[in-house]
Amino acid sequence: MSATKSIASLLVGIAIDHGRIGSIDDKVLSYFSEYSVKRGEKTIYDVTIKQLLTMRAPYKGHGDPWTKVCSSENWTTASLDFLGGRKGIEFNYRTVCLHILSGILYIATGMKTVDFANQYLFLPIGIQKHKNYYAETAADHKQFTMDKLPRKNVWFCDPQGLGTPGYGLCMSAADMAKIGQLCLQKWIKEILIPKPVMDNRFRGMSYGYLWWIVHPEKNIYAAIGNSGNVIYVDPNRKIVAAVSAYFKPTVFDRIGFIEEVLLPALQSFSGSIYDQC
Image (cartoon, rainbow, N blue to C red):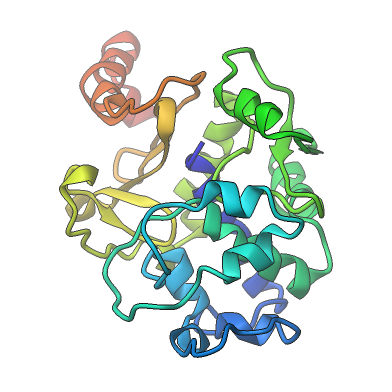
């Protein structure tokens, strides 16, 4: 689910580190020279990669245009069609239109999302190679999202084979923990700078670059997806917890479960687990 967003953020960071993407301050349209901006549209010219990563990009309309994007021949172009319109930098949580990031990553690196992830993130830290998964029909797309059966190592993709950066990456809890362990070892910094979210739907948490900042004062952060998929990282106690789940909408109690049940149980089980880490 949306924990995929946090992995996509890491991939953008890797591309910047390798000099493929210039900066998070790059204008989005600088990567799409052949894109035809809609007549009268002006806001889109100033949108940056950073705005996409922090969910502060302006979009036309309200909510995610799933049908229009996912039924189109090119999901990146369809997503760009919704970018722009109203001005403002308020928090604007979107999922499907985040596909623009996959388009940028492909143009910048020449590699499909899953191939770039395999080479520069998954395989180096011991996560098995992933493959693309493409749904031919809307029914197959819905089935992929809602099915409760276990998944193989796949990443949902568009007709061009670009992985969806907002959802659709299938990974075991053990592999999710490897991602958390990588982050625990100080590999990331700037993406964890908290930015307040003025929206009571998100329980007072702040937002970094596609990572939720659970406790800014303690620097505890997490990748959080619908159904209760979570990668929880506590740098202070050197603890990583990962939870994977089948589809069940609007599950929001995983952070509480980790902090109130799982971590105390681990401490009780091991005696002094925090001192051993």
